[in-house]
Image 1 (cartoon, rainbow, N blue to C red):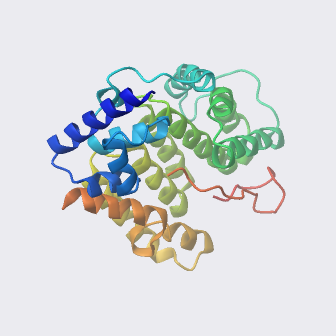
Image 2 (cartoon, rainbow, N blue to C red):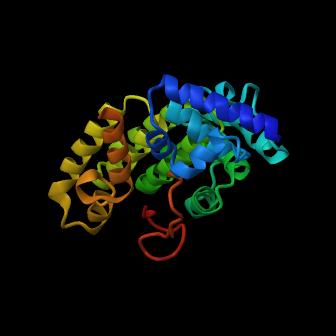
Image 3 (tube, rainbow, N blue to C red):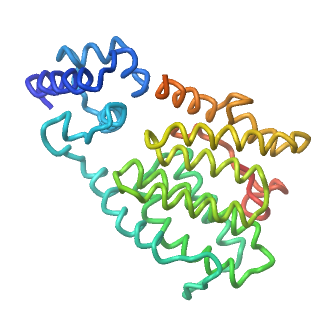
Length: 288
């Protein structure tokens, strides 16, 4: 994007922001940028050359990115490859149902668990959208098959499915798969409800809010508060305590999200270490 294009985008950005009756400060907060950086963009002194920045600004102003650039956003070859995986992820989200065996090869659980570990590294550590997009469709099918064929590992399979749907949610949200992030989040919610573990319902409540973004922020705030209240009785359980800290009453990531909802009314997840309950990767129930 050259200097003329940067100035043009800055003018469009200012026009849309003014039309939305948002101050520079409010817009910057919604987009996760500093006020001075936003001012330089509007004045043509800084060029927006990252897709993530463009998408954050567009989401804050509730417009399509092309409304700010005046043209379709050109992606690099890696970005194009990641976008190509969205079709396969969408097909996997549409065709699999919990409790239905899709057929095909299903390996022994330790081998599948190792694949879930690999997906978690691609998702939460590397943010590798191409790698996730290539792995998620195949792994989703195998996990659904394992749910039926390996009944002794159903709890572990459900946790693996939640991780898989979480990856699908973030990949499709990042790459513009409209409607798919919420579909993935709802599939994760179904798995969490089967687990009957409040800490997992808390995780998917956070995921659903992240998937919806700017949509129905008041409802998401109420849902997050309700989930914090639901987790409260189990505060003697270490896993529940850890989840509770992510919701408004305890602060954490969802607390930040809910405070942003409050602003509207008036995520990449940070890398984590993943292990099984017995300390050996892929052999027990995964811990979030």
